[in-house]
Image (cartoon, rainbow, N blue to C red; front, side, top):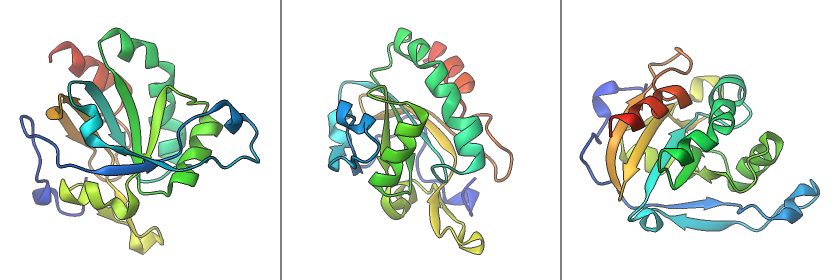
Length: 180
């Protein structure tokens, strides 16, 4: 959960604030791990008229994110598509090259988009940033999941600090899609 649970400023029924997320789009050339790719941007307005599952992690390659959070989304990607999800994206405060490297190691290819929330600025607008300076990580995104339908929040759940992956995990989000 964010440093201050009372700071969360978004809830079900709200329209998300606009943002433009840097990322490195997948291309087959990225299979050569000496290729870095060219960063681009994805504005949230591109999600208008779409059903989007966005889950945020404190950091690429960090143990819980790398082992417990992202892999089930990859494994269950086709289930998300079968439930009408147009876009699945993972968000972290890492730069677009780190997110691209993580996406390549995990084999995301063109399925799950790895987006950068630089300095957790967008997450902060939602009250969902996390100060991990005491660990040397600076400001990060909290661990959370959001289901959007035409830019409107239909589901938002935030993990309490130090609890691992439950309400923001793939299984919880898949179950929530059944009731939306």
